[in-house]
Amino acid sequence: MSRIVQKFGGSSVADADSIKRVAKRIVATRQAGHDVVVVISAMGDTTDELMDLALRVSPRPAPRELDMLLTAGERMSAALLAMAIADLGMTARSFTGSQAGVITTANHGNARIIDITPGRIVSALEEGDVVIVAGFQGVSQDTRDVTTIGRGGSDTTAVALAASLAADHCEIYSDVDGVFTADPRIVPKARHLTEISYEEMLELAACGSKILHLRCVEYARRERIPVHVRSAFTTREGTWVTDLRDDGTERPVIAGVAHDVGEAKITIVGVPDRVGEAARIFQEISSIDVSIDMIVQNVSAVATERTDISFTLPKTDSRAAVEALTGIQQEVDFADLLYDDQIGKVSIVGAGMRSHPGVSATFFAALAEAGINLEMISTSGIRISVVIDDQDVPRAVRAAHTAFGLDADQEATVYAGTGR
Ligand code: ASP
Ligand code: MG
Image (cartoon, rainbow, N blue to C red):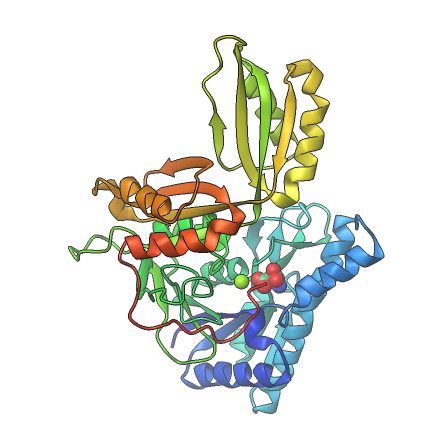
C-alpha cells in the first residue's frame, strides 16, 4: 500500500457535478488500497471573483484581510468534496492549511512554506479517512495569521505535503493531459510530453508556463518527488516530471516554448555612466521586494557619457517600482523613466541547447520570417527568451514551435477551464 497525494485544480471542481466526479475518482484510488491525501483548489474562477469583489469594496485591501478572504475559496471546495466522498460511503475529513500544519512566512499574498507538521493528517489517515487539505494557504509562524502562498500555489501545497508525508509521488490533476510543448490554447498542435526533467520544467514554469507553479517544481526537485501531471477528465497517462537521468535516449533539443504576458518593461533613460549607478538603482528596486527579470544596458553614448537601462518585472509590481525610481531620480540624475506594459516574453527551453549549436539562429530566423521585432533578448544555459510586442506573442509562439519541429499530427484537447 502506498501513500499518494492528489491535487485537483479549480476547473476540475467548477460545479457540484464535477465535485462529485472528482470524489468518485478519489474513492477509486482509496479502494485500490492507497492512503490518499487530496489537495484542493477553489472552485472554477472563485479566487479571481473574490479578488474582484475585494477591489470593489476597497481599492487597496489590507493584505491580511485579503488572505482571510481568498483562503475561504479553498475551504469551501474542501468541505464540499468531503461531503461528496462521505455520500459514496467513505469517511473523509477536510482541513484548512493551518489545521493541516502548513507553516509559512508572514508575507501575505506570497508567503513561503517553511515547514509542515502533519500530525493531524497522519492520525486521520491512520483512522482510515481520506484527507482533504485546502490548498494555497498556511499559517504564519510569527504572526499566527492565515496566509496565502501565491496564485496557483495549491500545486506547491501538494508537493510539500507529499514530501512531509513521504508519499510515493504527487499527482497534479488539471484540465489538460499533462505538459505540452506549448500552451494548447495558443498552439493547437502542441505535442504531449510523456516525461520532462525538473530542470526544464523549472525554466518553463519560470517563463510563464502555467501548468505547474514555479515553487512546486523547485520543491519537487529539491525533495526528489516525482510529479505526475494529468487530466482530471480522462484516465490517460499524463506527464512525469522527474530526474530524467541521461539513459542514452535521444531527446529533442527543445522541450517546449513558453510565453508570458504578465510582465512590463521600465526604461531608465540617460543614466550617468559612473561606477555604482546600476547598483544604486537595483538596490532601490530590491528594497521594495520586487524581483526583476531581464536587464539590458546599452553602450553609453560617447558624447553624453550616459546610458539607458531597461528591465522587465511583473506588471503587478510596476506601480511600486516606478514610484521608487521616481524617488531617486534627482540623486541618480537620470533623465527620464519610460514604462511599457504592452510587451510579452517568449522563451524556448531545452537541455539539448547545451550541446547543439545554432538554436538561437533558428529561433531568431523563425521570428524574423514572421515579421516580429525583438526588443530584448536574454539567455541561460538551457533557455533563450525574447521580449516582443504583446500582440505578436501568439504568432511568435507558433512560429518557434514549428521551426523546432514540435508540431504534432493531432490537435491537443483542452477539457475545461477559462485559462483565466
Ligand atoms: N485558487 C488559487 C488560485 O486560483 C490557488 C490555486 O488554484 O492553486 O490561484
Ligand atoms: Mg494551477
